[in-house]
Image (cartoon, rainbow, N blue to C red; front, side):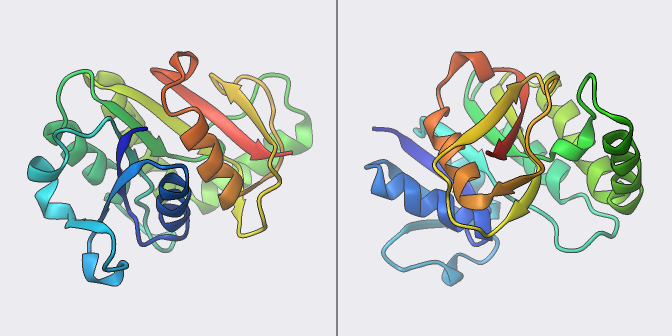
Length: 201
């Protein structure tokens, strides 16, 4: 079993990650801007204590994200703080977005939809790109998981993944499937230093 820190633990994906990890027998530290919003039976910590809290964890998962579509630095700022707080070679998985790239061989409609989405989500995507650039330049063992459109649908128990994001995946991803994929592939070497597109089947 692993000792895992989940950043952004009060969000919809973060809460699922915490619950699934605990059910699987992992020891979990939940990190959030407001730890008091978390269950008191959890090991909890605020965002400003990363340097004190993260040492000794086998992996860190960041599901931190911004609310709304306006200008943001949440993704890059949280990732920069994690890079600073974690030791060289530490395992970090972040949640990004499949909308950052269009897979090879995508059809015309997919490409057009991607352009529209890039315009609508331009501030969020710009900061996610900054986040992934920080990861690529870091000494961490990182993975950027890029789900397609997130939903609160029940887990399907099946996911489609594209390591390197070159192959198409499905249009929707349930947060439950996303959390399960992250935990199942937490120490999968094939995903190290890669962006991985993920969807529900």
